[in-house]
Length: 322
Ligand code: AHG
Ligand code: MN
Ligand code: MN
Image 1 (spheres, rainbow, N blue to C red):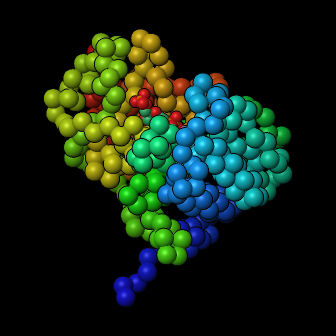
Image 2: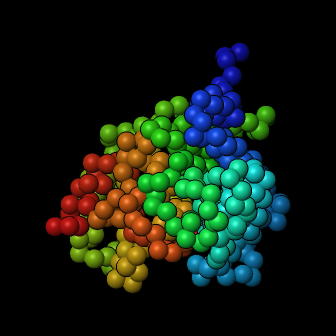
């Protein structure tokens, strides 16, 4: 039998062991993987496990909360708390940050979208979970402001995609790797080592249904893309992004006259995926400037997002600026 690929845990132990500055980071990422297995099982069971449909809650985004959103929130809060390495976390579904401990051993901060693409849950279309990880600047008591960090200060980003296979993508400084969940062993095994976003671009992703609300610069940029590429739009950011990361492409959720800041959230959608994109040679932009340079003012603030192949992102920025 061909050599079994390394597990995520072994990969992390080898990759991070020598870096004293990353002490405890492997425990955070391993915790995310444990949580992803639980959410993945909930996703696969779906109706059989009572995981379809909605609760009667409206979240801070003003959106109705899906049952799987609740499973994802409680699961990832629990595993990150149990890791003993996370001082505080912020979650799309929770209005306030969750303070865990100011102890110096809890040196990381996590911001996350527990289930991305919730509108796709009930129709069995790919969804995912997205995480940005920061190291605390110092041991001072953690406040809500502690979590308002520009994306360029992330020390790692992770997303899981629950699709035809379940893949956990990990970005560390200068490197991106994919690990596929082996249903037999429940291990995440290294299957995509050293991901680089391809030069060639095959498709663009945008909700064309919003076209009549776009600003003229955005409309011109999308016209350029429409002439060149095929349209692929899953409606789950993590699925559209993962395709672009592996096959080359560009995803846009621009602002428009109705929602100038667009729909996606800076802290736990745009920043983590822009971190992944940049470590793989791509780019993440507001349409005007680098997403990871935006100084957050609020935990759940929204941002326009243009992400994927760096050259095409730059072209879109130039057209919008024109
Ligand atoms: P979430 O399910 O976490 O709220 O995210 C949904 C987002 C994102 O995944 C996707 O790209 C976008 O909503 C789709 O929005 P539209 O349905 O407006 O196109
Ligand atoms: Mn989302
Ligand atoms: Mn979500």
